[in-house]
Image (tube, rainbow, N blue to C red; front, top):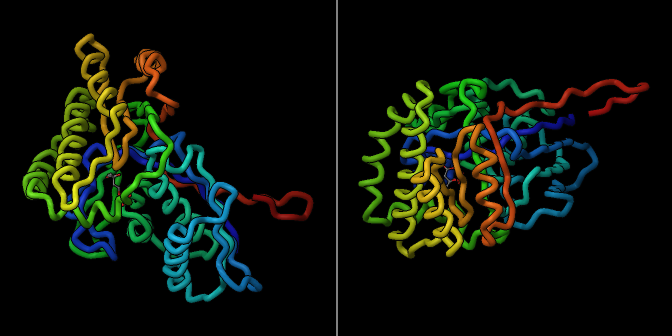
Length: 332
Ligand code: PMV
């Protein structure tokens, strides 16, 4: 009753921002993302007969109360599916720092779902796994699928899930993440999804997303980087326009965020193929092609506001680690 799984974070090209049912994390629009290879979470889940309560360790430390509650709620969903009541020991670590502006909840709940399924022997299809992960964190449903991914908003729990547009090897686009701060965001994305509906810009954003989803899908199929990048930038700005005009307003940007957005525009004017996108935080994701990663990295390193750089490419669906027998004992 133990398993370990690794899952990638993802970067949204078309964003999920706004939920019509937060308890079930049902979104107000479809979204499209790329699952990432090097920004991953690895989680081991062990269900034990003599545990009195669930133990949740994140990056070697006991999880905060709120993180622990979310993990336990997810364990409860899996215990219900398996019809057991055993408590679990969960240990999770990321290849990137939590709060670094990389979606740790997406890779975290994807890895937890994959490890939990393997540990409990749950009989769930890939679609069932995507809906399960979504209940932990909306964007986690996209991390259950490798490569280029489309989350269909659906109408209810069963039909709101992510499916593949194209596998990771279809198109090698890089996400160069410029970390400008390690601080945790002051307002959670859960609260942001609630506030989004108060923005007068929200209906306009929904109409816009409807029209661009097919264009972004076509751009992925046709490997059209200019369209992908242009839409990714416009999407990030549209989502942040909703954030800025919510009640109360949400401003995730720092001066360094604006500096980097303007730098990306200047570099593009000089001929470097690069486009920015942002999540619910101040760090800037720069989309570029493999041949210009070094150029972008070099330019970022020259900017004092950039603390660290992470380079990611397209990644696979979650992998469950094989357990092999070593001198009579099972090892992960
Ligand atoms: O899954 P959540 O609730 O952390 O929401 C993710 C929201 C964004 O990262 C800002 C956008 C997205 O689609 O990933």
